[in-house]
Image (cartoon, rainbow, N blue to C red; front, side, top):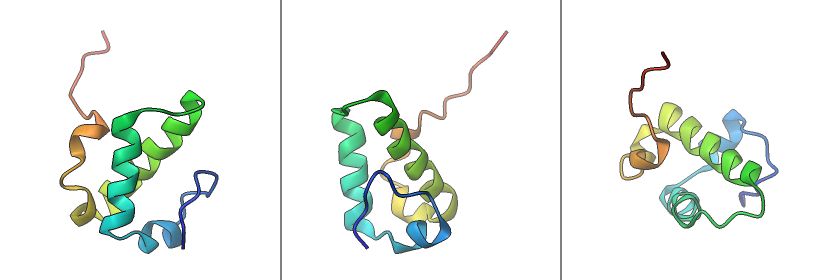
Length: 73
């Protein structure tokens, strides 16, 4: 299944990912060359879903998830 940014993040989509697809996703996020901020956000949410459900695919890309602790106060 070829990934298209309009796809909804479903269990089927997450399970269809392999190392090459994850690399391409991470590459897009690294380059940050999206037409709209929402396109980048869609990819970020997909990488986050992969990190939760398929962590073996995302170990090299966790820096893109920006999971630093922060204080909202």
